[in-house]
Image (cartoon, rainbow, N blue to C red; front, top):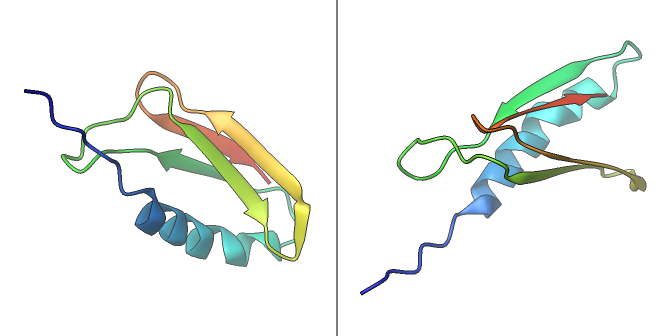
Length: 75
């Protein structure tokens, strides 16, 4: 019998948005490295990650994590 496992992306997106918010106000070029993990703290390879700037929702960056679950955004 297969179990349907649904990842909890809500809390992850909330944490990422708190980490990114202060960096968006900085005028210098900044990069953020995110490691996407599941509930067992195992890397989630090839997960899609999207970053939006809340004041300007037209600025959207989306990338796919590598085989070790890591994605780097340059802001």
